[in-house]
Length: 334
Image (cartoon, rainbow, N blue to C red; front, side):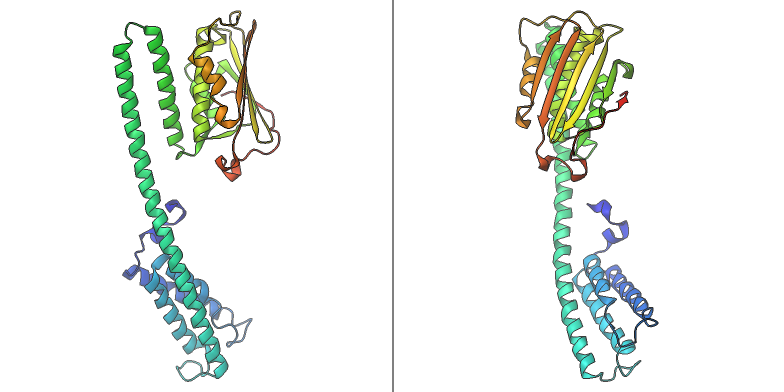
């Protein structure tokens, strides 16, 4: 939120000398803008029109008393410059007094409203700062706990190297996904980036992606990362990535609100249907249940084919990243 405003505005403290200087500058700029209207409007027409935004900005960035200072300054300047008798503080006409009273009343409401929203904005900034600190601390603690868990598992499972490698790989995928998402301020990640992250140890030439990229919110991105990790690990041990000529193709399409991902392996050893179901298979088949999704595994002799589908609630999408219609098809390497 703070990045939306220049450092100067963030540094203004209500009641400080800088806040009153800022209010003075706002009023002076409003006066110059009003004087520029003289060629197209008579001196008595709309004498206060340019002061409303000046008072609003002075209050919102400088605080309540800076807003009132801007209001008083606007009254004095318009009385001197734009009310009869001009260039004096003489008694103006009754219509001008009425207009001055209406301006004072309206500007007072603006000061009160701007101060109310300024305080709300300050509370939001404080809460956002506190939330960022808590999230950073939780991420740090979680990473330490996962590192500790890896050490404990290494001691307990040293006699079972295959199980140890499998568990460490899954924990490593979780850590990598969390760090990847944290770098995007917790918003989520692009599907192509998640795939590239998992395929990095094997080289970009081992995967072909045919889809227009899709943004995944944080929770869905973590689940998809774990699923990709299982598929990549399986392909490296038994499938296409275990052969030097093997290739994995990933297609992604968006049909309305449904995201469909198709994983196809080719060029590896002959594939047979496994006799038992492990943790990886259960994860693939159940992981997308919170998103009304499912995974269908087909063990063809030419290679594994896995079809993932999920539906993300509207509130999990940033408005600009919400899928609309069918995604265009293109070919790109990770």
